Image 1 (cartoon, rainbow, N blue to C red):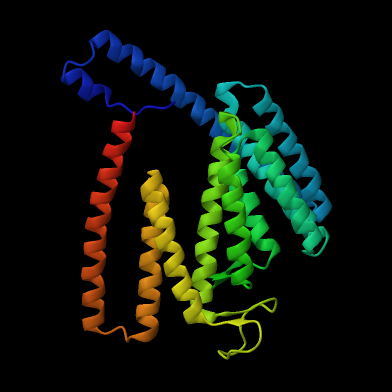
Image 2: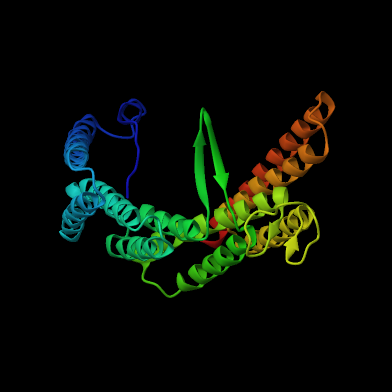
Length: 316
């Protein structure tokens, strides 16, 4: 557990003695030195790996270098030396990304290679107990069904080709991980929580894209807004999204799940304003009213969070 303390203020207030101030300061300096050393070595490893890949820019090179860096990170992690955990995490992340990217590139981005990397990332997350690797495994699974991000000049884009598949798949994954967390050892709760939260985001992103474009089931984006066979229209997505958010918000309130409730509030606002500005012009009047609604919602959410914190304290 890490705690941030202002030693000078504690000393001024008389909460600690000068001897305690000096002792804690020495410990903090030692920790800072270890952190800096880990970062320096980590950046050195990244630089060497990138230079080696630049000299021999092939997919096989990326796989070999990535696996070596990944293995080094896993060995450091298994050594359970606290001062080397940051370096271990850097090596695991860089090695997994290099090896995974090389594998996908070597098979021309095939579905088989993406599924293999997804499973590999999930296994690495479990072995290294890395929340970041759990998030990457979840995002890779989304990539397997056509989700991706795009970059244009000074612009970024989100692409979800199969909104209904994204919603169903990651709803099931989030529910399954939530149930699984009840029986897993405490050491694995962080990675299941990270994957669950990422799944919840992806479900909402699927609804968001669907509420704008609709979805031809099995055919990616809807080519035109007609009620053809297998087509779910954008208004249907918008209404279903609102109902799902309402049900999830009620569940989060009853179970005292503050993160879920706050996420519901954020995406409820996104749903509202998406439909608002899709159907109304962004004129001064609509913007003013939208801002007032946002302020009222923020104040209400603040009061709800305070009530939930008090409920948590009473439960303890």
